[in-house]
Amino acid sequence: DAGVIQSPRHEVTEMGQEVTLRCKPISGHNSLFWYRQTMMRGLELLIYFNNNVPIDDSGMPEDRFSAKMPNASFSTLKIQPSEPRDSAVYFCASSFGGTRQTGELFFGEGSRLTVL
Amino acid sequence: QKEVEQNSGPLSVPEGAIASLNCTYSDRVSQSFFWYRQYSGKSPELIMSIYSNGDKEDGRFTAQLNKASQYVSLLIRDSQPSDSATYLCAVNKGYGGSQGNLIFGKGTKLSVKP
Image (cartoon, rainbow over all chains, first blue to last red; front, side, top):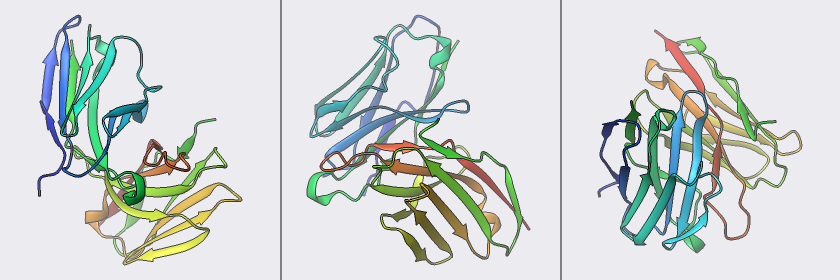
């Protein structure tokens, strides 16, 4: 079975450019999470969705960040405009929710973003 | 106070020894607790979960939870070089239906020397 699929795996861009990260969760999972990982701050939750609905976006740094989940099999995280401090590894994760929840998250391989 | 705290390490142990990893959390209403392992350049993967006070054993791994002290630990017996990784403690702040909202510590880097 395919795991969580993220793209691109690596992105190098210049300050001010728009960046879009993509995620396909595991089929059947109804919770999706976007995390950001840096050496300084560790793994931080940005936003999570249940059944395609954003539940908690309190971790989204500022208005430059936005996330969407138009259907159960696809989500995007957009940064516009990007800044050097956005450089990090962005992980997407999915899990079962509701009565099937176990609390286990399945992570994608991550998208390493470098903003010059 | 950070929500989930871990000693960043590195923790170095010889092969065959017991590695002890510790974690404290600040929110008393936390319901469930997890240990994830992350190899360098890879994504985190779940190795243990614990929900009740006491010990939970799975092979060479034992998770320990003390809710009164807000303390979680992970013991790795007979440590192997392949156990060298960063271990992330995670706490579920949610209750009721809001599961899965995991708060992670920064992780402890473990190095097992042959």
